[in-house]
Length: 423
Image 1: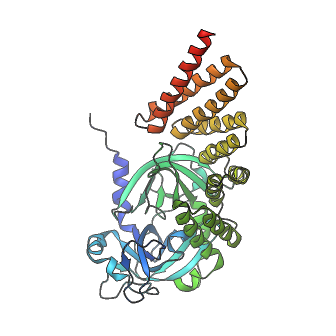
Image 2: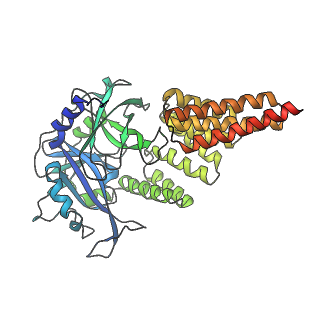
């Protein structure tokens, strides 16, 4: 049976296409991807992001898309095909922030007219006009309410995706969405069913389906913050001048740390995360990222503190609960780890890795019970672990970790029962 099309999604996608832009930026990399800035010999690669018109001559996007970059271009949807055929050759000079006049593909960016370094938003003054998207009231945005995110993933194709509100941060200025997030969507608008902007997508936070390549939870900035930013619009400064601001450079440091973390250059990643937080203490998601890296080098106490800090900022951050549970288990506090994992599952019953990790902690407890000679309790925890892996597989039958762990746990339990019968 064919899946029923979401008429509202199609309508919102079409209505707002002309008011969105694709950001394409040049950036340096310690591991270049083959593209070289011809005039400088600097290794570089191309990154993408999204943005949208909030006033006839102003575009909003996130700071992290533009911090530490060069060759910034904002491409309208109706110019994407032409850009795709010749775009990358336009990034030749580190300080060339505009596409050449003869190409006439990009929206000419005059500079920054306002920014919020605490909440990751920047407002750009541009030389042409477009119909702005209407801004709604994010305070009336309810948990579970349907939303639509617009943006340009890595393939540079315009996309509209449906989702819903998952949770809010304590200050009500940030929230998390249950939606598919792909690299390139950052900076795009979050719209409600009334076609009003209720937020700006910042980044993907993690995946509840156990697929590290697809974020199914996205973190967004509320329209309340966006409205405050618009009120601050004033004198225009160049992108180059703006990028030198210490709190803006902190976003580039965070991105640099993310790259190092992906390469498992753990201690260097922690150093850069520390430097970013020192320059801009409001980059709170770093606590969660840094906690993961600390766990890799077995600094479990430090990891616990970072995840605990993240949860105090956002009491419904399901990934922080899952990761704090791991730190607790490694510190020998298995029962408290179970509490954190059950909290994560209560917040999102489809969070596969929480079930897998719940099974893992119960296996640890079962092993301890076996060593203590409490075979009855050990068998109970092994069976509960099997049940948890089964729940994970019910959500995703292809999850190899859940399948392997369930198989291994069944063998252990069978062996334990056989030994008990022969005694």
